[in-house]
Image (cartoon, rainbow, N blue to C red; front, side):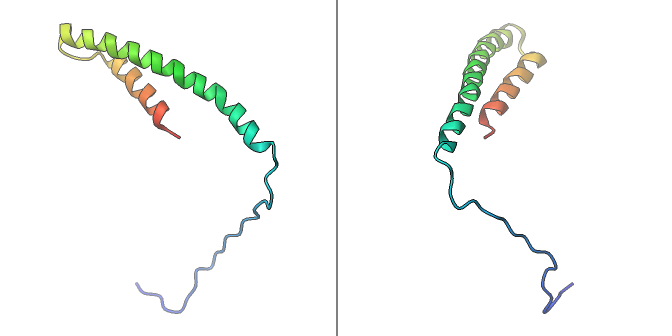
Length: 81
């Protein structure tokens, strides 16, 4: 189907701030601190799970589902930005 000479009927407009307040970057960095602390804790958990799952794989031949889920969720949380 080809349309010639017809424009899309919708439009999109955004009111942008002309000036960012001086304190906004500071507030954003302060809000990032708890996020970084949680990510640091999740990295410790992920390393412990990796060691435990390595021993589980060596002795049983397969990775337990709970350890795989924990490893995948910590990995997904750390990479989403």
